[in-house]
Structure formats: C-alpha cells, structure tokens
Amino acid sequence: MSLPHTPDVTIELAESNRRRAQDLWDREYEDAPTIPSSLRAAPAHALVELMRACEFPAARALDLGCGNGRNSLFLASLGIQVTALDFCPKAIALTRRRVEEAGLSGSVEVVNQDLLDGIPGGDETYDLVMDAYSLCHFTRDEDQRRVMSEVARVLKPGGYFIKIHVDSSDAYYLERLHTRTSYGHISFDPANGLKKMHCSLSTYTEQVAPKFTLVKAVNIVFPDDVRGKVYDRSIFACLMQNVKEVI
Ligand SMILES: C[S@@+](CC[C@H](N)C(=O)[O-])C[C@H]1O[C@@H](n2cnc3c(N)ncnc32)[C@H](O)[C@@H]1O
Image 1 (cartoon, rainbow, N blue to C red):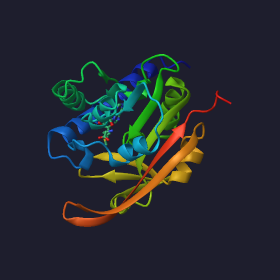
Image 2: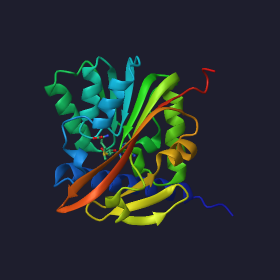
Image 3: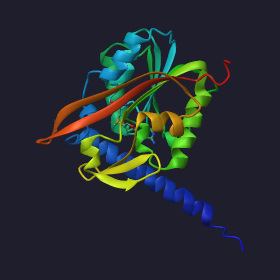
C-alpha cells in the first residue's frame, strides 16, 4: 500500500525541526548567552595556536557555523579568503555587521545555509575548513556522516580540516549528560535547550573523521566559572589533512 502523504510529512517535520533549532540559536545570540563563545570577539585560542604552529598555505577557507564571525575575521586578517556559513539569522546579522565594521567585506563572504542541506559550492574548493564548536550540535550519527562527507568533498586534496571540540571529560557537560553513545555521550543543557555530542580526540579521529589524517592535536584543560560554579573544562583541537587522493 502506498502512503502518498509520507514525503510531505517528512519535509514538514524537517522544516519544523530546523525552525526550532534556529529559534534556539537566535535566543542564544539575542538574550543572555549561555555559551561563552557566543559574544566573544576574540578568535578561538586553539585556532590561533594551530595557525601559528602550522604555517600552511591557505588561500580559501570555510568557517562552518561561524556564529558571531570571530574566527572568520581572524582568518581574513591573515589574508585568507573566507566563506562564513551559519543558519541562524542573528549569527548571520552579527557576522555581516562585524565584517563590515572591520572593512573586510572583500575578504569574507557570509552565507546563510543549513549544513543539514549540504555545503554550497563545488568539489575541491577550499584549502581549509574549520569547525569550532559547531558540528558537535549534530547529535545523530547519520547527520555527522553526511556533513563530514560534505567537508571531504569541498576540501582540496591535501587540504586541511581544523576541529575544536568540547571533549567527553568536560565536567560542565558531564553534569548535563543526556545519553551515552558508542563514541562518548550527548549532553543537554536546559539553560539554552541545546544538545551536544562529546567524544575524546582518539574516538573522533578513529570513528567520526576516519577519512582524515591527524597532523597535530592539543588537549586544553582549564578551570572555568560557569554561572557561579567552577568546572574542569576540557577541549581538544586538531589539524587534520584530507590526504585520500594525494597518495
Ligand atoms: C557554539 S556556536 C560556535 C560559533 C563559532 N564557530 C565560534 O567558535 O564562535 C555553534 C554555531 O553553529 C551554528 N549551527 C548549528 N547548527 C547548524 C546548522 N545545521 N547549519 C548551520 N549552522 C549551524 C549555530 O547557529 C551557531 O552559530
């Protein structure tokens, strides 16, 4: 028996999930932010360190889930042509404003796109793709796989992928553990209604990004006061290379 209405129902559900996720992010950028990076102007510390330590040539870069644009602006300040991508209207507006204020409109293209619909652009477009705390919000295995295969598609052979991630030993998110998974766990933060996936660096490189080769990695552990309570925070950052077709 055919079910003629099933595709429409699936599309409607996907649309309502997308709007709900965009609303949560809009609130994060509009009201009191619960994620420290949401209003931070400085680029991610780990990104600055990785770019300093590895002097690799990058002419074109893609910033996945650019937020307020802080990392895109940093990459543009190094002379890199950047595509800053996000699906949250408030984040897009913040990034556009900051790019204009910095006089970098010629270096940063701001793109409003849901990564669940893929990455716009042709194959082998970018020398560098970066993800600072964004893809962790894809908590379904199939969504991670889909977006990682898009990352591999748009990266040039030999291109680089930078990943910055709150790992599975982070005390703040362990206190908010929602579901254990094969790679680590998913947290849920009632302060902003957002879920995040957490794993260790080794699990990430072996299970989530097996198509990439690890070049350099750092683990950063630091005490941090979150709304009046001190937690042992833990993140990893890594530089990986898309070597599949170079060999
Ligand atoms: C924690 S913020 C990180 C922002 C930025 N990378 C930084 O380090 O400041 C995560 C960002 O990912 C974006 N994001 C989440 N899901 C997305 C999706 N499906 N498509 C595009 N962007 C998404 C959110 O709107 C948000 O701006």
